[in-house]
Image (tube, rainbow, N blue to C red; front, side, top):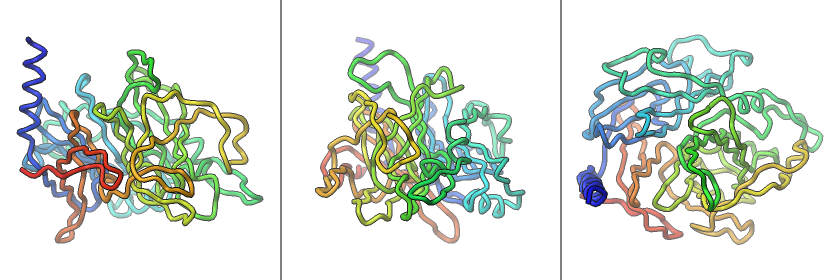
Length: 355
């Protein structure tokens, strides 16, 4: 009886969710969103700022002045923490953020990529200092790959696997049909989308035990073809048992360059070599895209040409999602978190919920 009442209360709660939540940002565009059902609030990252809003979109608490790239978000209701990707780096994006904030830029040796664990219950006002509510865990794999130089077809390139840092992040189960009780944190690389190199057609996803973030337990590669900046938002959805990968479309004409991909979590990862990555010797852990969405006949790659999701993709359970529609109005960035329902069709995948 208690289980039935819990399911009923959740269902009623879902019915009460607004069809959209509009949040006004600042200098930078929205990077990720996460919904806290217990507190009835939305968390948003706007690159250099973290906002807590009510369901009307009013900002009720904030962490600001972050001299870095605060990216995608994921919410852990059990630990009441938000997990986010956070980059401090020397490339054009990192330098641009620092210049806009009027702060010092980072050198190559100062570059860091971190998992930010945000204690949201300690954010009790506006402009709270980041170091008072965030714990940072360095992502050493990404730092090493970013700093590395590699040779491809006789040319020297910076950044192994074209790693530009990290961005997409989500909590989900382990891969495989026979799963353990381990809860995992998945962190996706950013990938430079250069069209003149062949080693940047895989996306890279690190898998951590959520209870131990010191080092990943797996490093997965998934062949998507070219993307621009890799996985912007990574989201596990229990309703479909999929990982969704929302990206900026790639630019290589040989690929379909979808904006949304999915991975079935029921699959067993395999060990196999990487194609067109000559410096990677031997086999690595790989997962494959699901057969959902459109299928490109030339490459066999599946995905969707869905307009939204790269700036915020938040599954709610039971087939509902808040998906960010981002934009600029009167010189200020905004996030409009719009409620969608899964339909699974190859052409669209989601229907907007109008209330």
